[in-house]
Length: 342
Image (cartoon, rainbow, N blue to C red; front, side, top):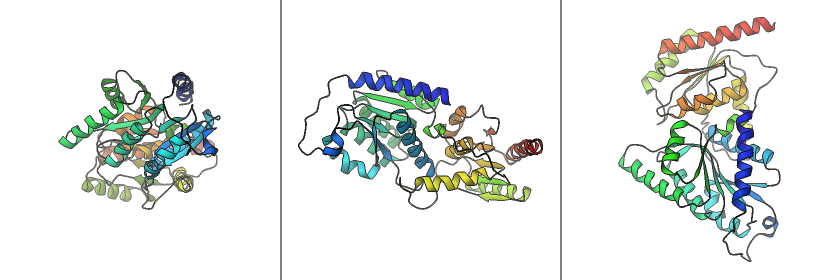
């Protein structure tokens, strides 16, 4: 991953320097904020304000990455609700080299329309800024609404003159290349994969299940419950976790919540998950993981970035027998490593 992101840093810096050389068309305002106008800023926006820790991990990782690789810039974090209120003051406080970064994730499409509409608002409001869409997954459903929302999104993206698009999977990359032939389009891994949350001292026990119960689930409710019962009958220690924790999280509480979840993962011998960030969290904590596909391409193509890790297994057809076999294999491997270490 480090090579990929070193390339990302170099290319992004080159792209940004190239773009900011062009004349910037904007009118100065007396209302601009004096404490910000003399400081180069990266406005990191579309931050979540809900309970999905996967999205909060993307926001946290994006902020850490930008702070590390662009130390001359002040990072201004703006969540979705704040953006509608702060767009004008931020433009009043503009420095000529300001940049807008939109965090990535899986909300590009018609499944999460509020997030998608906010993305389009940002692109329209900051049309004279360089805008970077960080690694995202696009999914527009094959419905009248989905086709309508796709046309709307394509029009909004096309109208931005200085937009860099990043896809975190091949399907999204092809979609972006097809519809935006005149824009920069890169394929990059999910930003959370820039993190390293391993721990030297850890004792692992049991199986943790992290399975979806929403519209993105591949398993039906009946099949999910059958799988859970089967695993509980087979293994003595089985726990349940979720990346949607049922309470509001913001940028002041996200690291505490993420650290709690990562600690749980580091204590598990094997995790079974159909969540993209369940898989990615296992990758950054070096936790053995059995990955079940989701209803779309997101998990299966996201697996491409972690397929080289020996403790990750993808099941395209997650039968009970296949899941049990994969868990057993990881248990056996981790047990052998424990004996060798002892």
